[in-house]
Amino acid sequence: MKNSCFKIFLIFSLAVCFLNCSDDNSSSSSGVSDLVSSSSVESLNQYPVISPSGYFVYADGSVKDASGELVGTFTEGTIVDLAGNIVESDIVKENLPYFTGTYIVAPDGNVSLPDGTIVGTISNGNVVLGDGTVVDLSGKPVESPESSSALIEIPTLSSGVEPSLESSSSAELECDPNTGNCVTPVESSSSMQEVVSPGSDINSYPVASYKDLLTQGGQGTGWSSRYWDACKPHCSWPGNVDTTSEETYQAGLTTARNCNINDVEIPTYTLSKDISEYWTGYAGTTSACTEASDGGANGAFTCTDMAPIAVNDTLSYAFVAAPGSQAACGKCFHLQYNGGNHANDIKATHKALKGKHLIVMASNIGHDVEVGQFDMMVPGGGVGAFDALSTQIGVSKDQLGAGFGGFLTECQQSLGWDNTVEAYQNCIIEKCDLVFPNHPNLLRGCKWFAEWYMAADNPTYVYEEIDCPQYLVDKYKTTINTTKITDIQYRSEWKSYTGGDL
Image (cartoon, rainbow, N blue to C red):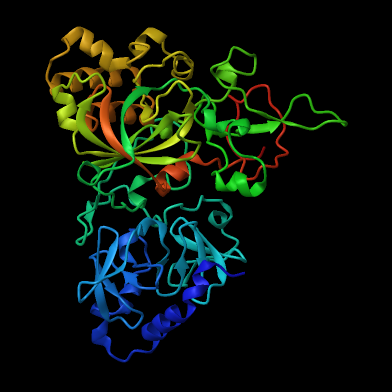
């Protein structure tokens, strides 16, 4: 089977020849052999992307041909040759394949040989070949086909940036010398049973580069509200994603994960409870936000590891309810905060947030959400019109803050509307510690709002649609309903499910 990279087969053949046949060891510092300096993909910056014309575009902005010769530079989406002439323009690096020296990795996660033959897919920073063998990006085996991790489906990346297989809870800050991007360790607690989904440790993921929307512009401007009702995500319902065919189901990243009251992932849908020998159908697992007998404590909740998380001081990830007129399940957006407020009532908190970047993924679709608005999922942000959170964590609803606005709104009411950033942060953190002490993911997300988000109330931003980073894909994509067909039996309650066979 061939892919679109076949058209530059000759260029890659030259590159492979250069890599394998050159006798000039000194060329490794400036030639194409830079591509294979490491088999661990810590960032997209480690490997050059391949332009539509077959040039190798490096992270430092240099552009080389297949022989390793410098032929130009890359800046702001344009390749300029050494004479200053524009060679290619409108290039988006995240949408291009990259070359590891052995394989071509396409943006959809397919992995090909230089002749265009697809040989496997990316899985957690390595290549899963057609026979199940797992190799690194240089082609060296890393585990046998029989190993348990080779059987786990790990979602492929939509942007071409792949995580490293290894992670460390004591990882030190690592920065790319070309871009300045850094991965900041974010510790997690194990004081309760939490969801462990593919790639749970954010330290195992690379940090992509995102443009400065405040200076370069985006698709539009908008504002962010907040909530956390703990209900089954809108995108967990099979009726809210494209199940026309297996292809469309996979292209839409299947369905969003949901969990039981104990934070264990459960099916997003099963066989209907009304099946008979004459009729078979599917039904979504009932939301915990319904009063049905199979809802409430017996039903499906938002998985707590979908709470916001900081990547570093200026970049974070989160899930949102996106406007139904603008977005679909599984779409991602890059927001950069501009220091404003939706009501034009700018406070110190909004100014403190200015310039930071938030990458959000739509796990819910809000048909009451405005175009450009993203209703961010933040523990302690208010439960809104529905409430499964008090059921899930065993507290009264009045401990969760104002229904609309959550802890910050209560802190504004007690401290006044023009207090310091630090005062609001301390007030929110105190409430986070009081309500979520036994729920590390919720506690992390609640404190994130105070510490990283600077307790900003309905801030404004410039935004653009982007490909999703792998971390968000892994947190979003169900690991149970991995195909549109299921034979999982209906259950009247899911709270006793502890994982394993269904």
